[in-house]
Structures are given as C-alpha cells and as structure tokens.
Image (cartoon, rainbow, N blue to C red; front, side, top):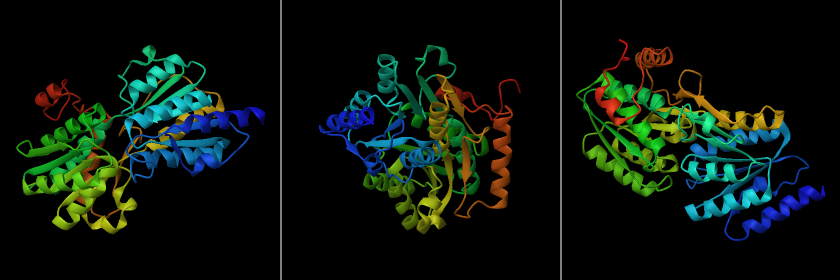
Length: 348
C-alpha cells in the first residue's frame, strides 16, 4: 500500500505543472497502474481517443488494473504528461499516433516500463529494431480507406467528385488519403478527389468550413479523417445534403441524430488493440514488436448503423474486402504506387 501511495503522490506532483487527469485517475486500487497519455484531439472526442479509452476501461474491469488517463490540449502539455507518467513508474504507458517519436525515445530511455503505441507509424517489419519494452499496434489505414473510396465512388458516381478532409499532415493521415484515392480510382478512374488537411483533430469550425468549400467544388461524398473535428463535417453534410463517411467509431452510433447523412464509417477497432496491449501486460505474455490490424483480421471493419449501405453497396464492399484480404489487390501506400495502381497486384 505504501508503494501505491508513493506512485500516486509522484503522479499528482508531476501533473501539478500542467497535466490533466480524468475521473478514472481518482480511483485508488491496490492493483498495477496503466497510464494512457491521450492525443491532443480530446479524451471524449467521439472518435479515436474515445474508442481507445473504451478498450482500456473494459480491460480495467476484466483484468483488474488502475487506469489513469492523462489528457492534453497542446503538444507541450502532452510532453509534460508523458514525463509525469514516466516519473510515476507505472506498469505500462499507452499513447497514440502522432507521438511515435516521443514514445519510442521514452521506451529506449526507460527499459523498466512497458510502452504501447496505438495506431502507430513504426515501419512494417521493423520489429527487430524496436526496444524490447515497446509494442506498436499498427493499423493499415490505407486498406480501410481504400474500401471507403470504393463506397464513395459507388454511391456517388454521378458527380464524379469526392472529398477528403484530414486532421493533420502526419503519416497515418497521408496513408489514408492514398488508400481512399486508390479505392476511388479502382471504381471510377476518371473521378476527381479534392482534399485538405485542417491542421487539427479538434477544430470543428474549420472542418465544417472546409467541407462546405469541397461541396461547392462538387463533392457529393466527403470522407472525414479528422478525429473530433469530424462533427463539423457531419453538420455541414447534413445541412448541405451530401454524404459523409466517418472513421474510428461508427459515427451513426456516436451521432444518431445525423444518421441519415452518414453513409458509413471506417471503424478502426483501436479499442480491441488497446485491450490486447494491456492483456499482454497483465497476463505476462508481453513481447515487444509490431502487431498488425487490417481488413483481413477484423482490425478494420465497416460501420453501417445508419442503414445507408444498400445490399448492392454491401456486395461491392465485400468483393473488394475479400480481394484485399486474399492478396488479389495490394493497396498502394505511396504516391508512386498510387500512380501505378490499376486495381490488381503486380503479379496479375
């Protein structure tokens, strides 16, 4: 009990210079401590961070650990929170895409703490180069976004224009845009894609403004890959009468009042990835390295709670999902691969 009290005291002291904790951190269990350093997009963003927290809270209930959530409004505050978490010496620190470099550096400098990166940007097949105390739960965003592009072009093949709004100019978002463009190209190669990065995962006003601009350019479907900012796109789509495609969680479940305008969502099951990471920690099976989540193993699925995916669209989705899963189609990951993409693997 003395050791736990010391851990909590260190944490609260470290957070006094700017960090912020949610209500989960007010509990005091005689159990291992798992800390989640959330991204700047906001803890209850109805999207990425919220989904991870759902998985971690499930783990806390079932696996019995003390969950502490550190939320940040700025990059500087995130760095302070990460330092505070390290000083507290928890069993595991979990963080998210956009902070890969900080987490990798922290893992290398603190071999006695386990670290988990959710939706990371660590290179594929680079597990041997990662610290032994570091796991990266990688999501193949290009694969999921490809399928969203297929649906966008198939549901809106009369306008010939689709939109993409990214939250920030980071590898995860770039990968998603390339995949989305490839999916549209596979179905309607003559279509035009208008895209923008708004520079934030929590700027709903700017997201709505950019969505309106893209719609004015003819976009009949807009894929919002912008975390908590997406509500601005959804509201604009509802008022403008065009389709919205969401990401992370099924947005028709998160925002049921907007279900009629939400075509579908690219559901990234980051809650499962977060749970997998803490389960490894708690059952003693932790092994550093890269763990892949994609459309072939249930890591990325289709969210269609809004009821707008017709049987025809579902059939189209299933056909392409199978082709990706069995290797018949390899989704481009770079601009050069996108330029050369013809909807099939090189072998064909």
